[in-house]
Length: 579
Picture 1 (cartoon, one colour):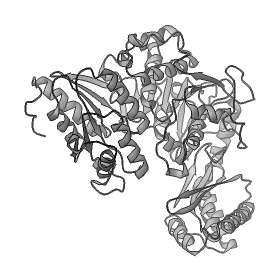
Picture 2 (cartoon, helix red, strand yellow; picture 1 turned 30 degrees about the horizontal axis):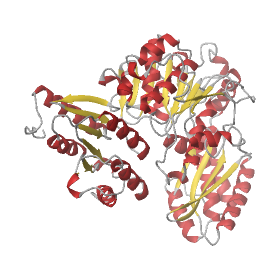
Picture 3 (cartoon, one colour; picture 1 turned 45 degrees about the horizontal axis):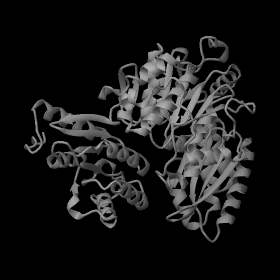
């Protein structure tokens, strides 16, 4: 059971609100949902609210579920979650009611009786209400100044044009210097694969144009050359940290599926957004069970773009094409079909489709882009084309785009963890982050084109939050190119509820079923152990493809490679012990 706040527009609502993931009784689902609506209508009327509701049903492994969402004032979202919970607890059948009641008891257990619940909610609302926040939000909307909030701070404007105040010490609208507050060039980057590379490319292009750039991604939060925080910051908190740094004159924000589904789109204004591609990944989470539904989630970044914004879409992606070709849905603010340059509709952004067939003139041939690995990494050519269109939408001159693409990727530090290439005693090593079948297939395709006469060894593993079908698809993608060795790794910190060895066992069994000989499969208890296994197996001319996922494991892998390089290691020699 999951009850949470939505801080911005989302798959379910066009404004901030709350959502509850409910388990339905298969025999009484319709009655439960009708009762939820009736109870919710009654209690919000008593509180004086006018709300929009949305119900989205799906089937999970434990049976039918529904996402129950309703809008709410932005200053009382915590109490609004209790309103939603109260409506559901009274509507659900006994088993579901007990589960929901347990969840609600962790916050503020409300009386079941209507009048008592209303009285308790009014007390909670009075404590949470923030009239100063509502006044600032209304004035900011009229002034077209972006407003970003969390539990502690309110920020008006972005970066060098922004200022923050404590949530409970807000200024009156008349005391704000509205002329000094405003937006800066901001790009949102989402998709299934290529997000972090695209973020770094656009950031480099903006730097080449003279901006002081802040960017957030699955590797951390960065301003100029400073890492403010490491780890996965591709959600709302990464965006907030960038917006609250007064040095920043342009921002590039990785906007991952998880953040959009957990909290909605918290970036109110952006000049450009890109969806790099859509591929099967994370199916089942939050009820998303198809590529089409995943595309709808990721296209939510378009809600930050007004009529003057640019939405950059992968024209070679069939799912994106199909979704955008459909008539505009009933949900206000949903992405609508817009021909390039038409600017149709009061709020519809300009849409630019990109692909290998239509690179802008600022993109040099693949042979001149280090990131393309001599043209073998076709997916990075696509990333470069998409990034060039985004940078152009942000006002970056073509000369700066071209200059960036002719150098970016020439040093491994340009794009950590993404197609980093090393040579060690005649063995070529690629360190990457490929983590789903689509991404791994693209990486192994590049490796196949570059293998020469040597053998190919692959490191294979996955986080435990993917279902068994997704794990099997990843293993089949690994074996599709019939590598000479597959070392299957466990990732202890990414087991996410799975037992030790459970994920590697599924991957190994799938490889065997796909025809991989048992003597070409090895097992490793940790990521770096898997890297060591492949190094011990390698001989001159071989290519080792190492998708490494945990940041600590990546650091350990790079440290091992550097240690071996310094020692003059050659294949066949013993590897140093683990410190």
